Length: 249
Image 1 (tube, rainbow, N blue to C red):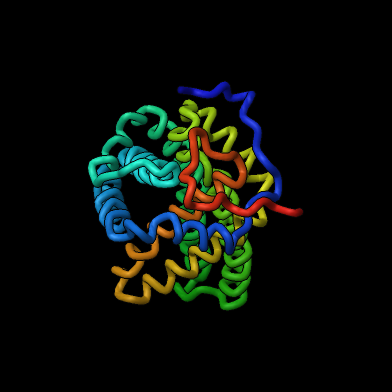
Image 2 (tube, rainbow, N blue to C red):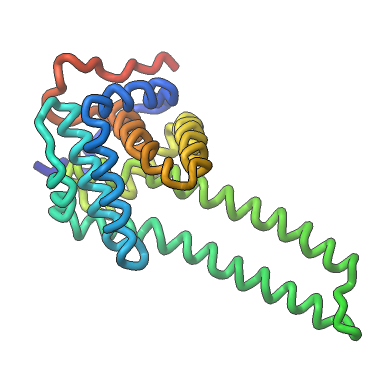
């Protein structure tokens, strides 16, 4: 059942970063290896087509499994591919996420290389002017800092897009719009949670990159928990798994 976009309420400052990770682990630990397998296959399949066209449906499949687990319903590996039931909306949400990133990143690289060649070209002997080069790289450092901040804001803003498509059956566009509103209302707490899961992912990367696949299921489960803290979850909850603690802020 789909939910009217304008009638879906969300809480502000509701995300508890450490509790999201704890509750996320409680959510997946009994079927941890199943979620690892779903994550690995989902990432591989999602990476086959450029622009993440298949990544959206795979993410929907993972969140579908997480939400079913939260409701106490049985899950199996094939549930991952039920994400294709949301294919159109998932692709729209993915493109709305990826295209702005490409619009920001690609011109940035062009600007960087054009600037470097311009500085080299202004020197008569082919050697760049040290002062100009130092100034350029100083400006470039500030420029890339701004770009990174923009990318972080975009990543936080899209946190709830796939969960909203799965749980509330929103269209891709409406899911993105509502995700941006709710994420901005919980920005610093969401950012804190994403930093914590990012640090766990970094530890996984240090383990020959393979370790990141063992951390990603926890990252997705933490986001699913944050989603529940902000929006609640439709349907009946699993009685023996306590809901995420309410925010007192």
